[in-house]
Image (cartoon, rainbow, N blue to C red; front, side):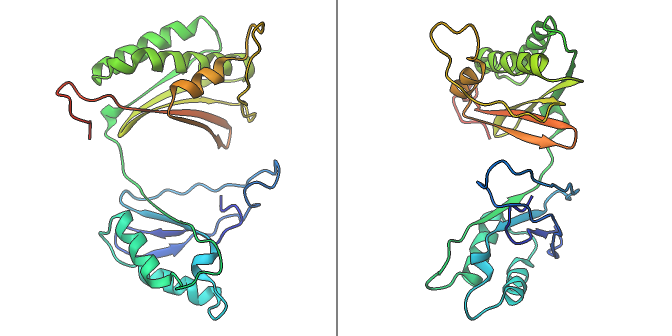
Length: 244
């Protein structure tokens, strides 16, 4: 979704640049208006470039000229995202910007198959224990036993919440990369909200616990529901060095 900004640029591995025709959508923060989204298949090694109009438009330069300057700055294969940002800012950043400028470059890459795991979960609270055991076993295989307890707690809360409030199939996925990402998919489009339970409340603490134990968490909507995701830092490897 563009959230009211100019179309993102797709830089393919060969250096060719395409401006993606996506729904404009309302800017972020304008109430609870829905976003129309599009899905694209991006080759590994592509760059997705997101930016605000302050980068490409100014008083003495119209937007079409700015887009062509952006295309020229991005049309080089083999760059890192950092190098791409530097090239774009060198080419387009005014000496005295008259508007706020944001620029994000994300590079696509494919995880090895052995670094992901997923499970289907029936809408039955008794299934939570089985998923916890399977997750603990997978984390042991990845040498991540130090975060097993925290991860099991996070997933228990998210799966229980999905069973209680959503309908249809529930899916759990783990991704082990530069961090550990947990995802719980369900068919409900309602996003949970963090709240602080009172001393005498019997429930309402689940998402609060998730927010305390995870480094980051959030909601991602899909065409048939949503995904609640969390991110945790990886512990050092057994030799004491940070994991790559």
